[in-house]
Image 1 (cartoon, rainbow, N blue to C red):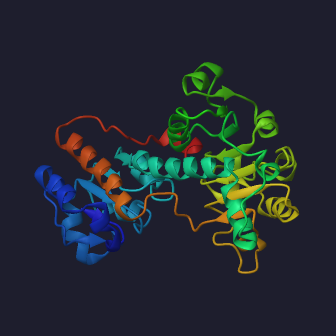
Image 2 (image 1 turned 90 degrees about the vertical axis):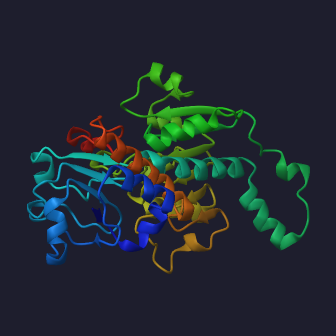
Length: 328
């Protein structure tokens, strides 16, 4: 049974993927619920063994689970399940899978594109070219280029790891900060493991990929932002709460740093925020993750998981209760 905002269903499961679901499960494609406690959904929920959830599904609390006594698996066609899953579900022994791995690739691709553009100072040159209509002088381009530029990646999350993989063909020097990764694992990922403060001091471009948990709240505060070298670039495709917005705004207004921000805190920013108009800020409305035809990648992950469930195999992307404290 589907539990999500129905608007997402056709993009998550275009006809070929919906056919794969039908081959292994009994599914009513016309029944997509946003509220598991809705009386109209009661007959189907009473028989449901697998719930395919997505954006727009409410929290699966005790009341929701009471309506689905046969439920044994939740397959989430999106990323984080933290706001979706209540204690009652874990207590009931229901297994949970997330398509977060499918969402990691577009975020990593977006980040890679921005790293390459930032290394060429392409965004600033675009602004200057608009005003001057003149090609830059050698002096104006002397400090740009991607050869040997140091990229600091904060967080060996699924996105962080995928980004490290995408960075390998390029001539970057890559550093990694993650308290759960040792030097050997960092090296295997293609990066030098550094403490956070040293990574900030040494990096030309800093890219955030840590989860939004209490330990990471405002991890880039005023003091740590000040460690980034003059002319450095901060890229945030993770969560806005990881950065002190006021402190970052001050650095950007002063022109000391540049930023590529796909997420902010708050989101969206107030209408009067200078970040909308600063030439050294590239601001996008949370588009790095799966959009449009990329949603089908999430649906494919769910289809593969449902096939495993039908075959009696373990889930490939199971989310464990014990991991929630340190993942997005």
